[in-house]
Structures are given as C-alpha cells and as structure tokens.
Image (cartoon, rainbow over all chains, first blue to last red; front, side, top):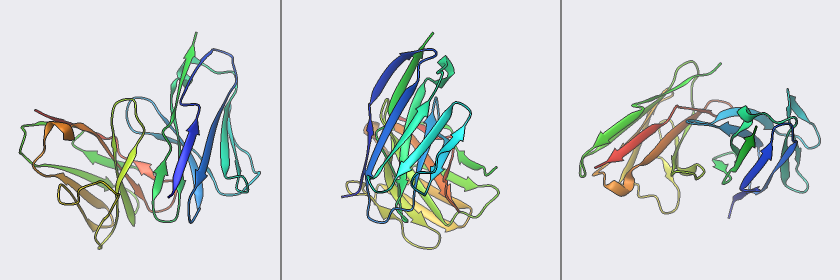
Length: 109
Length: 113
C-alpha cells in the first residue's frame, strides 16, 4: 500500500531555532515529492523534488531528496513566528498525489 | 502563476440536501484534478482522482454515489455531496494538475445542519 509518513507530527521551537522536518514514502511509481505549507486555508507550494541529492533552496527554507532511502527533509533556519504552520509532504506517484499527515510547527517568540 | 478557483468558499445546508462544489483551473489545462477532504487539525485525505472525460477513481472507503465527481472539461471539475448529513461537514479542497506541482483551490467549508 502506498504511504507517506511525516515526522514529527508536532514541533514547538523558539524564534531563531533551526528545524528539520522528515518525510518518508513508499509508492509504486514515484514521480516527484512536494512540500507545501498550510496556514489557514489551502496549502501553498514550497518545493518540488525529483532527483536525489540536489538541494532546493528558497530563503531560509531548503529541502533535499534521497530516492535510495525514500525520504526527504525540509530545513528551516532562523525560524520566525510566521513560519508557524502545518508543513505537508506529498508524493506524486504518476496517478495520485498522496499527502503525509503533516508536521504542525509552532514558533514561539 | 497558475490559479485554481474553487467555489463556494463556504456553504451551510440542511441535512438531506445536495451541495455542488466547483473547481476551475483559470490559466492552464488541468488533465487531472484531485479532491481532498480535511478534518480539523488533520492532513488532507485524498478522496478521488479525476481525469478529464473519464470516470473518477475513488479511494477506498469513499462512497462514489455520495460524492459525485464530474470532470467534463480540462478546466472544470465538480464535486457534488449528495444527501448531505452532519458527518459530511468538513473542509473540501480541490487541486488541479496540468503539470506538477498541483495547485490548490482555496477550499470549501461545508457545514451541514
């Protein structure tokens, strides 16, 4: 059965901390892995990863994929209160887009 | 960037009525559209995948006769919740994919009284 597992499910940090969010997957026909940030409504796109070992970076956020070990990490450095959100990992298996349970990140001032 | 429009954003209905939710891709052709359901503090749960011009593929446990999906064109998919009941109250989100990444609609909050 295809599945996407995120950890931790919940994380509380203070501003300035660095966090690492994990996503592991098992799918039949992997095409890409995506990270989204969800605040109040619909998720917003962060990164799409298709190749192993190539870091994607956007400001304080970065992400990398390991297709051999079937996981990805999302790093956020120098966290800010505005980073508080649910971070969702999704895997495109060439037919469906399956989401993990999400990591709820809370950044305290 | 690509825009996906979902309508309505919020609907309240009486138990037993049917509710239609529309999902439109505004500036690209969406060959595939996904419908998700999200309960409070939980992640998105895939309900069904629809490809233009063909029947939707429903996830296990999702009643296809209750959640009718129509994907009649490359820019429009609809989800109809038939004979809605209070347990159908939830946040429904569509996403449209012409190319990855999929783009999301703003979601529809359904409250069934």
